[in-house]
Length: 327
Length: 229
Image 1: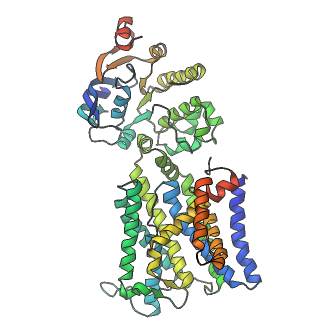
Image 2: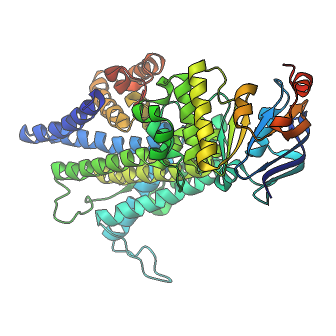
Image 3: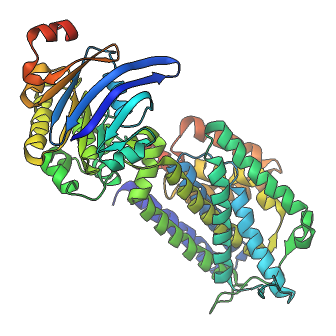
């Protein structure tokens, strides 16, 4: 086992041990805090598929986080109000079932990512950054002006959604669900990164001409990666909404996009486990520095600056002495 | 029938014309040497063949198909495998990853490439950036072979390599010709080595074909006039 694999396992171990200890010590707040880190990690892993493996600097991933969140909010609000979602031509009811909500969130955010990606990926560089930001902001203002689902005030869900056989209102059981999903996402993304698709995506980031010369189309690779990336981030959005039992337009905001990008950069761009470390550090800093000052983002900014300037491989780069996972 | 045929081909970089009138023809199983001094349009011709650059005039036919509207990835899928100038492997991928990422169905797989270049098997899990120049060249050839091409295009495959490594590359190219019957278009400056494997040759001067014929018919006078050697 190499050093990086050891660090990956240690990170997962710590993220599992903290809530178990917190439950024993009767500190449910710590369980919720770790659950928050796990959900942010899933969002970061989503962005990392596009940014880390494909080199697509998307500044609009809040769009997919928000779509996932609103998919949960809309389905659950209809279910709790006993109002059908659609009455004609077929009757579609709301639902409080987590698996159904996850599937809806994944499909809705994947479709959104496909549509945004199909247009945005015709541009590159700064134009790509700006167009993804513009799409996310469009959805942000749409959510604000959508009174049926709370408009600017957002939408509250009274009870967390249900998962067969578990009490999701119990913090440790909800953590277990999120942690299991994190493991599943990590497994799938690690497999995809080592599959020919992931390798070609990585290759396209390095040189598009060479990828074409072996018979692949960079645009298609990027579009598939962007769609998968959006789907994973959408799943995180649905979980985040369930954690807080609340969705609001702020899930679509550019600050959310920025935070997801911070998870990836802090942990290590292009490393499967990078966003997990980044999200954990972000939540830790938010908790520790947030207690010191209301302006804790200034300190976070300084740390981010130091990482970008002196540790391009992020936390994993510092700990392993290698800027890239292969390097 | 020719596998590859270029007739009256012209091409531009922006407003600057690089190819004026290129003709060449290459049959199945044939090795064609594309020759010329530096800056005469050899690499540009390769880019046109591989569709990395669109030609503006003339006709490019591959396997009876007009390539005018074909993008680069379709040219590769049609069977044109490129070993680009300067090697250019995917630096952060391992040797094995560089090869399997490019794989297309056919007789060339990782095992077959390893038989041709046993050193790649030894370096299987090493990232491409950490390989020597010669090993990177072997990897670049291996990557092109993994696409199972009908035509292999080698652009300055031995440039900048140590003499021992160059011999190894030439030996591999000779084996490809002898054992697979693959059509090969090779650009190189080593006339002695080209003479050993090339059936025919084309000489370019200022983006124009100035001589073509059997390699054996290339007289010292032709070499001196067009290649300055």
